[in-house]
Image (tube, rainbow, N blue to C red; front, side):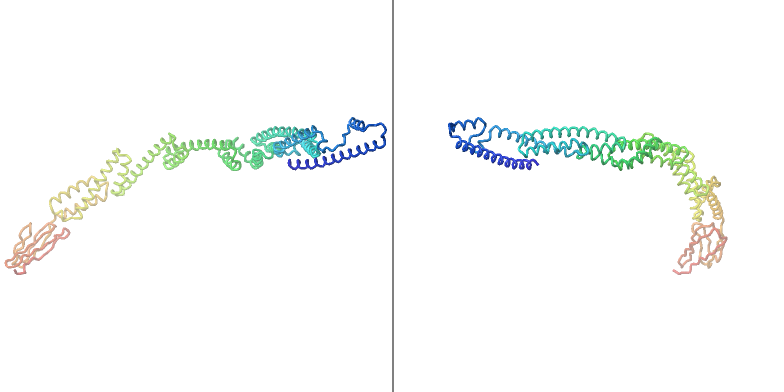
Length: 489
């Protein structure tokens, strides 16, 4: 802009100088012609030098051979150049400093009167400069600069006021006022980043207002959860609202505290009612909210004690049921578990001792019953009698023990009844029963033996001896066998 103006001004100035020179030459020619005419017509008594003197006195320049530049006063040229340079400096400052700030303002909307006046002054300055009227050009430009500075200062003050009102209205969720003021601020500075951001946020207010109303209603009703839910939705739309985030955190703390206190109370109530499962769940939920609260340790201890008592009770019930069903192995398992829950309980210790005794007696009775012929020995028979005597104490507790004791008693009786054994031979073999006695040489002889294992031996001179192992059963009245040595040596 500045370079274009200067180029146009130079071209115009050259034209004007050319016109001025032509005019000056014309004047000189006319004066010279008049002088010659006067000289020719009035030769009587008038001196040439006098005529020249008169021309000089009247302000007419003497005709001479000097250049056009020498005819222009040096003082006038110097003054114009100074004014010209002042104009160039001032227009440069205007274009570089004032114009960029004016460009931010919508002058036609904000102050059309002063905007038009500014344009008029700039055009007048340019026009005067174009005509080499530097003094007028400079004066017009100075007025334009003063007016531009005033416009800028006034717009900045007005912008600050409008922006402040827009911020306050936005903070109070007053959409109409915020929209009006931010539009005003943008009209005064459309390049303001802060104003553009606030305008964008203000544009969102209509969508936020229903949520804000819901939040307010929930707050009045002390419905903290609902208020937090609405706040969460609002923060997603307007994350820059730090106050909302702080309020949400505050609500979260309130909700957590209420939830925690409720869970603790429910846990204690569940313990009181003996519902360990519910109490444990409430405790775990409370721990997820606040894991290090001191009261949680007390609740945990109460729940643990309740669970221990319930396990103990369950084990004792199972043990009792097993004993009632004559299942003493299972009873021992449950009583052992119960004793782990309460090692100092004398009653459990006694029940476990009784169970172990019954199991031991059952085992001994089974061993004797399963090996009846061992009862043929006096020692084994005495041991069996002792077991039967011990089992007498628990007959009412264990039907199976009672049956086994009776079975062993019958077996002992049978084992003490002798069995008739018919021994047949050839009247040549000498028969004996090892460890018992001699049967002798016989063709047939009946002897009486207690049930058990025996070895019959036959001997005959010139023949190999013969050994026969015989089981005398307790469940038969008579058996027979033959012992004959019939294999020569």
